[in-house]
Length: 357
Ligand code: IPM
Ligand code: MG
Image (cartoon, rainbow, N blue to C red):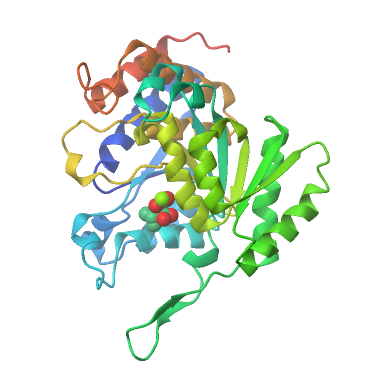
């Protein structure tokens, strides 16, 4: 296959982890006879430094023309502690989601056997966890009307959802459940919020079309507790933008490290693949960050482009790296390797693997 891949390394550790994912994709291209043409572009703080805009129009063009694109991370401490900053790196990410119509953020969480002891949660609670979150990404309180009242001392953010925004993500969640363990849990706050009650109405209409799928409903406060108490109850979770942001970070504790979790944002125009961790500025340039979440995001990208065996090869290699201890220092404080060494090792394993799975 011939694919046009956008690459947006972003800020902090973004460029280092993205470089390892590209390294692995190059091995895949060679091994399976594909051509990947990469187009690099700036986003986030680096783009503000270079152009004044966290999402320059050239970057948007690169994404629009790509079959899919990889995204590293954005953010810089100089903006985090300045609530008055008008231009912020995060705006680049939010506009990217909105302008490309990336309405579904998909975050799989699995408990790797080799890492069970790293999680602060008890082993018996997390062993075997295999869930996927479907978080709505272009609506809700993130994008509703917001502002200050005239007195400047009062502020508001509106949470608005339209029925079609709910329907399209709920449908994706049900389709995913059909290929998995056939259960969908809706997380909302329908005992208090009107838009959560709309979520339930729309969810129930779609659920009626999928009689073989078991459904469950949890209020977000209870869901936060259940994620720690008994995460094995979850198969597919679907929820709105802000609840999804919070619960997905919480669920990452199950995997043992934030450095392991990939994500996909799919929708209307193209699809974006990124690690769920942030830009981790303290580690930038030190070659210590864990590249696995980005490498696994590249696997999701390939799968999205129908390269299923290629994606499986990457996952097998990452799993081997975890089991054989070729990991960065977040996963083993005594014996660890650098970002690029872990990337090299995974790339070599991918190269050596038998092609059929
Ligand atoms: C995420 C991040 C973003 C979000 C930030 C960086 C705007 O936390 O992708 O989960 O809140 O969506
Ligand atoms: Mg988040």
